[in-house]
Image 1: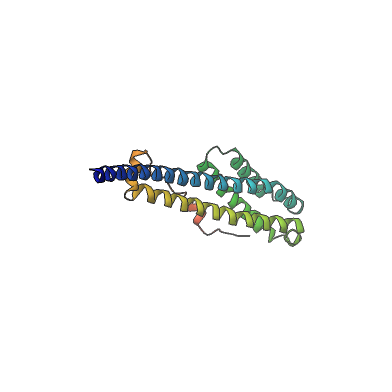
Image 2: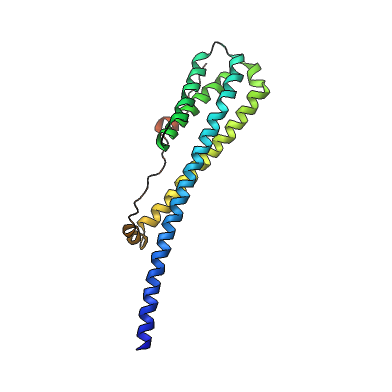
Length: 184
């Protein structure tokens, strides 16, 4: 009789530990997703903060290129005013496209292209672009881990118990995947 009692206790303890383990796993993966999303936001805002310095540097050399400068300014405002991650990513992509126009513009102005401030800002923006790309990749990797836990056995059982649903990956719009067209 004591052996059966110990066996029942061991099974109950094992089941309780599985519940605790999966609850903690979903919490950790959810926090990792939230953190990676916040990192994307930090990098997008950091990029937006560099834009005014870049615009001021470009203005001195390309006074008649107001359309490009306005486009960059408007894209920055949209990014700073975005309320959710979807609109922030969309505005971030618009800002990235507008910044490409600024850098293409530099090709027409050798003095701007050689300007120390412009080169420094260009390097900082390139570094931030790398960080944004890494943060997006980390976000999607975190989503993959989470979704694998939610969909695989026995995680799918615990996901149902804890009301955890599959999450969507961060997708890049088709226009951002296209090769940028640079013309003079």
